[in-house]
Image 1 (tube, rainbow, N blue to C red):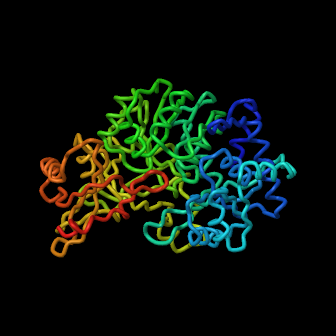
Image 2: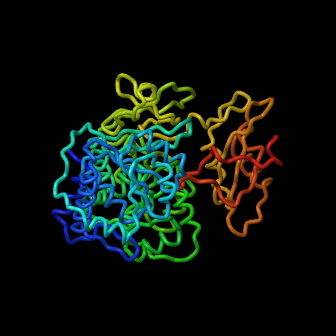
Length: 490
């Protein structure tokens, strides 16, 4: 079993079809197959052995799948990295994974070299890299790997300390692709907009690997822009759009009219989507959004809403085929989600203590996400366990308050965080981004929320921002939201 076989099998069946499109570049399956064989040959010439790690520090360009599948073909484990990492961060990833080689995009190669710490850095600059590959002997085989061999090491964001490398096996990822294909009903005519970063689990499994598995076309967008995404949907007749809630919000509020009639399905994950954003997006673009849930450690898909079953706004749906979910440590109907199934990682790379703390003897993985489940088995995320706000002994989940913020007609985005308070422990604060041209005040917003939630829940502190801080996938980073000094003391 080798994850790269998803692509090589499609290449044998659909060689002339377009596999990857990036602006004016169109790469057929036959071309992708040949290019990945050259990368595998390049790695073999460098002495990279099956099971050794290869770093990939590339944006959403055609070279990402070329290098990704090339490394897998050689039997290596891929270590995807954000190309914006700085020297010390690159050094940690490379040292922790003991990667032999690092493929780095030319615009970020200096940081890559500085952090490589002795590993070979192969700079990916289009013409020079093409010339390098042209001088390599092409590997025509796909290395045999066992189902439990590591295919990809995805480093978590490190919100609770140093990043940990989630070891995802060939079996984990191949099964998760199969689940995605069934959920999205993908076929060879699929045209997927690749706006999600390919170094992230969501983009890799649900966009890249799923599309390649059926012989579809992946339209790459190196950097997300709402207007560009809408133009691509219109011009390239995109059938599947996958994104995080902030992308949907940006597209929803983008001016102009676009023909999005080709869209057969939209998929949202990475964070909970505000119900008002979901409903408004579906109305404007006349499409269906399926919400899902997962983590890097679960390959990532764990649960999803279904097209053939009732969709409940705000729900992450039901556990996917072959996966179990339940709540533990339940209080007042809210508990921590634990997951068991084919999607759960092998463990954290070289970190048996963290692995033992995350996965119990029976194979249940503790997610750290708090949720409730209704009588029909639908799960509703409440919040991250560590983002719970405790105000005067009362538990407050930011997601609930953020839902109300998004109901305000003048609010484009909002994030709720806890602010240290001498007497209450924490106070509720809200950072808000208003729609262009709005003259709403912080008092207006405060009063709006106060009228809709219990007295202890509404944000006593509200401040306005031009934009919320976001991670590489577009997910709002609550940990980076700090109130200005003028409102820091409620």
